[in-house]
Length: 140
Image (cartoon, rainbow, N blue to C red; front, side):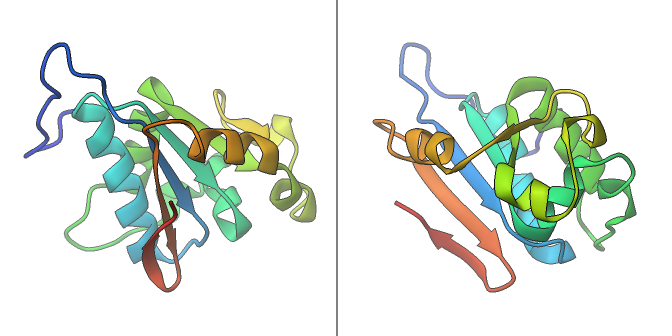
């Protein structure tokens, strides 16, 4: 997926990993999280998108397709771009609390817990962003 305005990293420069956490199904913060993740991928950065809380439902068939936001790329297209070239992870506890198992999720989505999230956000050079009902906050 080509994202207008995305710049590729300079050849030979290591790409900084981006870990994006989305905690809500509210259209605006979801769109922001998925847009940033897809744009970073288009720019050549490694991206890991974590879906927690009610956002776990966005990893199930048909849910992202039902989210619409004016003047924004379709959420399902952004999700599919991240699935194709990045990593999409659903929080273990969040999935269990919502009765979701691996078979309920889209192909390519993984379930992992806090230890995996911590490993990713503490990796050298990683930048973490958290999008939720209150907006975005740097997480590292």
